[in-house]
Length: 495
Image (tube, rainbow, N blue to C red; front, side, top):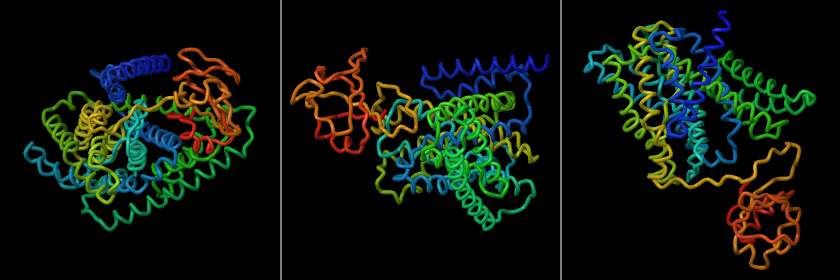
């Protein structure tokens, strides 16, 4: 009966989380915040008893591994290449500056609240929440049908996907210092950081290329579903092996996903669907587990509430902006408004809470207090920043309506032709309003027309109207792109 009860409770939690996600989308709130709320609700008064920090940490490790790998797969290198330098600086220097500024603030205000915190423990609290959370940033930015100017979206996704290693190294180093009572050895810290980053980056790229080779060379096309299992195994192996040889597994798995996502592999569309669904499941499980783990009575103690609110607001309005403006200073192509928006989307989420479990599992004094403060700061961040991601972009004039294709296609990866959607304009019909009057480039064919809510296959004498949507297939998409302006095409969307 125990296993049946476990499955029943699990199903109830998933049902509640799914409906919470739907409600969050309608309310414009981050779905992950409501997942946390569901976990807290079910854990209140021990309705569901869950108090294993080790298990929560294990769930977090698995979830972050897949979230980062999937995020890397969905990121096009062509998009992040122009913002590679600022993204890396924000993921390293930005994280370190945030940790130092917030750590100093905590050390200064702790005595005013009657809390005895050493400088090392103050820096440890700050280090756990010094990175932006990839799960939060990916899910919020990709659920909003909103474009961002100045390459801000790829920059924010690159930063959130690659800044966890820096926060992880700072957290592990400070956990060791707090546990042993030793002083901070900055030279050793820098050496450890450089080694972990270099090993993680090298193995991530290497395993990514090996994964592509395996996926394309192994022949299991008679059982295509096994490709998902194989790719999952490659992601876990990349993370675990890199961590075992003292590299940073989180960086390695993100880079491996980036490599896999930018090479042609078998059954890419099926794999993308699988990892998207699996990532959502792991995010739900992770946030539910973290919500279940927290003790609501300890979370609402006055010193925790005051410290959490103070640190959360200080991080949002002082520490993150200072760290952002300093880190982005060399990159003059970003406007002040763009830098301000980068500062605003410094979302905290699951990662800080997962890192806050390390002091608990290491038996550090005041670890529960640290965990509760970090948990409350995360809630403040999701409430203040997470609910205003779209609105702040509108206020700063950095957003635009992102075009979405009318046609939804799943094209096998071995087909080299590319599909695009063209919006018919009055200037396109200047020489005639039939399909044959539109002089498309060679090797390009209109295969379907959408007019209102009707779809039909056109012929040469088919009359077109301004506002029609054309589904175009081309063996030479570059030539089509070059002739877009000459044809009077205003909107071309890659399907």
